[in-house]
Amino acid sequence: MRILIIIFFFSISVSAQKTYQKTYYVNGNLKAEGWLVNNQKIDYWKFYYPNGNLKKEGAFSINKKTEYWYFYRENSTKEKEGHFINDVENKWWIFYDDRGYINYKCQLINNQKSGYCFKYKNKEIVKAEKYKAGKKIKEWMDLNSFKKENNLRDL
Image (tube, rainbow, N blue to C red):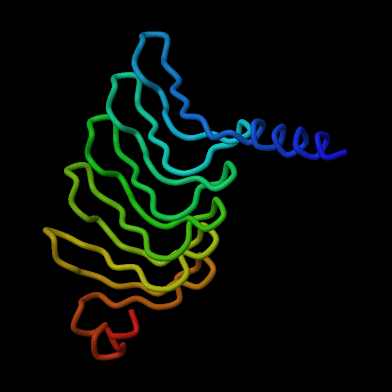
């Protein structure tokens, strides 16, 4: 009986072994790399475009995106970055223009704008909006009017 218990625990530990996987495009460039347990993505992963540039990177927990992720355009400029909770976009997200400058920042809940969004131009906030479940409920056309109505410490 004791040997059967040892074999059972040994087989569980072998089947749940953590491995590092790399996949490649037909052209030979790296497509993705990261950790697997039981064929499920865990921990940190990186994904690449066929030209070899980084496409996105972030953590998984049992095949679901979690924690903070970064997304890039094919020319390597940042596209967006933000938090995932259980494979769903949540909390603050930052979106970049084609040059890699911040275009806007938004609070998201369940992949929808829900909270404040700030629009940037030339690295300055030029507009603020408030959303609830993806619908705009308020808009300020400049930062000063926004500050008059809102406590910035709450952000």
